[in-house]
Amino acid sequence: MSRFSTQLTLTAAGLALAVALPALAAIAKLDAAKSTVGIVFKQMNVPVDAKFKKFSANIDYDAAKPEASKANVDIDLVSFDLGDPQYNQEVLKKEWFNTAQFPKASFVSTSMKAGPAGHLTVNGKLTIKGKTADVSFPLSVKKEGATQVFDGSLPIKRLTFNIGEGEWKDTGMVADEVIIKFHVVTQ
Image 1 (cartoon, rainbow, N blue to C red):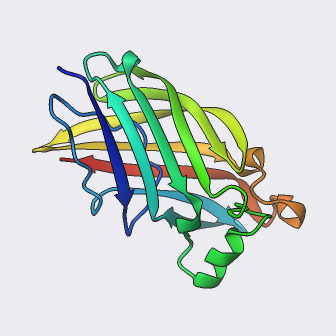
Image 2 (tube, helix red, strand yellow):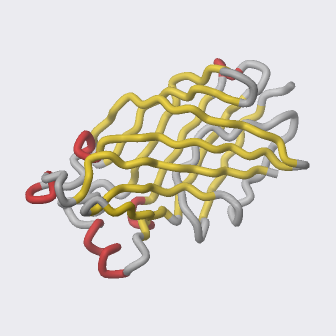
Image 3 (cartoon, rainbow, N blue to C red):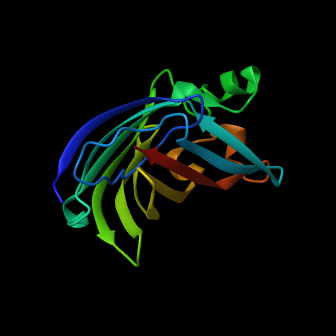
């Protein structure tokens, strides 16, 4: 298997925050219509789904040597979509994402390790709102016809990244745990 380096820029009506897009001997193209990245959190103990509409990823993956692989992802926080324009404007404010000062979030992988059949463990640094934390998450990889499908989820604590300042630090209204979920399809 050969190595490749590619720049993928995604603008999806769906979601955004892809990581680790493995491919085989040719440059894979993202199927933006089928790829999604979103988050799930609880507000007043009720699950809420949200998404990002824009992100970009620069991936260098070698399926034969995953330990040599790298991934960089940038997320356009202004593209965050809760499904309501008023809520969307609220989360852009200083107390939440503070997009005026921090318009992007990023993920940079530090290692990828092969696990049991079709699974990887991805480690890296996640930066949101100027705060960086080490993260690790499982990634499943499967081939479906001519496409590769990558699925994963990454639980984080929003307060680690100062998401929800002031009165919003209270986790009774909005839970601290946020799960970033992604489904990435390449052709």
